[in-house]
Amino acid sequence: MELGALRQQRPNWRFAAVDPSADMIMQAEKTLDGDLGQIAFTQGYIDDASEGPFDGALCLLVLHFLEPEERLRTLQQLRRRLRPGAPLVVAHHSFPQEHGDQDRWLKRYAAFQVARGFDPVRTRSGIAYMKEKLPAIAPSEDETIMRDAGFKRTELFYAAFTFKGWITYADLT
Image (cartoon, rainbow, N blue to C red; front, side):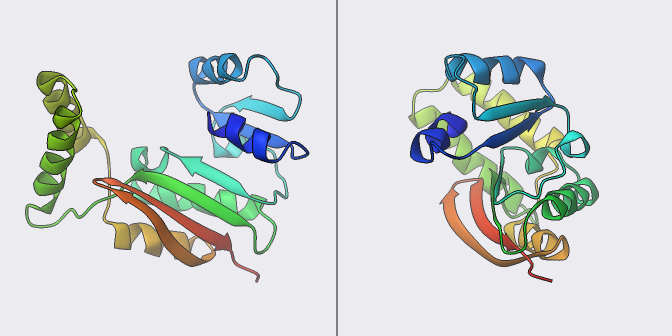
């Protein structure tokens, strides 16, 4: 959906999309109604991505699956592929992790999901999965990793319960 929206807003742009899941790529192709003229898909990870340089990048719902070391490496590889000053938009789960904060934030998110009509049993199961399997980190740690990867002027532009979104820029050096 994001590619479709970007393509609609910028019909002259070309896009390179990377995803490890063949199913997700097929879903994207289906969502785009097979109109893929401006989009090159690569099944894989950051190391499989084109070298660029690119004028901008999105990293949506990815980083919360990565341990901090791999998150840093992935962001460094993204930075390496961007032109100096190019924007990067990231969005993923990021919430406080200390002294019971994790449980409090996950309970808030679960309550919101149930209030929206989601099945309470499936919601609790999903929250348990997030707690046990997702290496989510605190927003301040995310910002530090972005800086350490070579990004500057990081700004939080979106926050909804456990989801956060930032825009940051490839360092000019």
